[in-house]
Length: 254
Image (cartoon, rainbow, N blue to C red; front, side, top):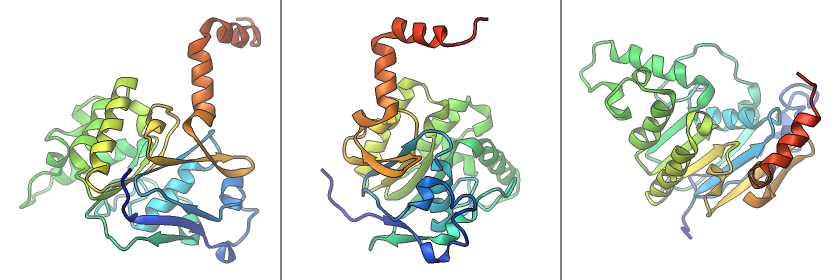
């Protein structure tokens, strides 16, 4: 077990500053009942079904830390469309004594916009090397979706960093997800901290971590084996024929 201080120790809702718990996103159960989330110094997972507020919470943490809402490093300030929620104004971040030397907010849904912004910057005159050199030396648009995702994890993430990843498995095969677990381990050994929102039981498998599960009743801590993602996947793969019969027999005839 690695014992060191976190760059980000906890996230806490500043409840007195909330304008109304009947307005979005404060009316979401996971936000309405949010107290203090203590973050693991290595890996913290934010999981749950769609609509529970995972991306909203991840975005608020990233923006409150200083990242661009659409992703990237603190140096990125592009905006394709301003749609981020006001939640970041109402959370407090408990920062550790150590400052990270690196950082990145990876957001799967806006990664295309990030890649386009990098190409635009590289097309302009600069005394420095192209930004794409930090992503493997090739435009992210000239790679497959999965390759461009993995290029950031392998080439851009350098260690001693705070990395906030929102659904990074979106374009990764199961094999690449396992490779990403290995990469997370390499970066943790280089004094990095991760906060990850994911639906992937593979990515949730990092052993020295904590899993927060967002539900209609609020936020609870679970082990990997207690998550719906793991249970449903195990049931399906362990008894595929029965599961398919139940799914198809319960649906409309086509």
